[in-house]
Length: 107
Image (cartoon, rainbow, N blue to C red; front, side, top):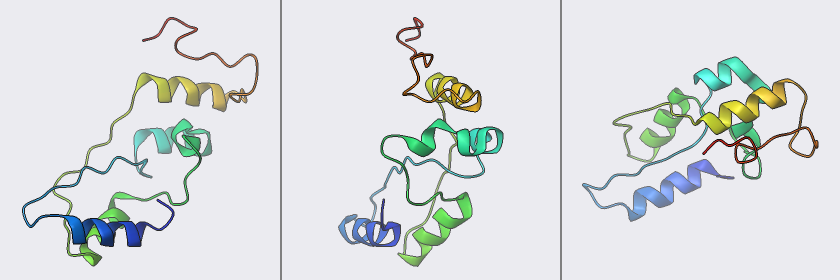
């Protein structure tokens, strides 16, 4: 989201009174953010992020648009951790040493 406030406003306009939104974005405060920092794979996927929200900032953004956060989950995949480990070892995706999950047999 390049303009999270506008996106949230548009979602609030379009949402039915009993509707729900599932928002999946990287959040500061997650284990991966705390552990990898700028080497966190999710920061560059797919095209980089403009904002790195915290749980508090998402709740504030929602409340400013008359929405509320009912549940917050930190989730991750083996892929994000695997790639983050390579980034932490200074192996970018463009490096021939970078190994994808598929090439390593991960599914």
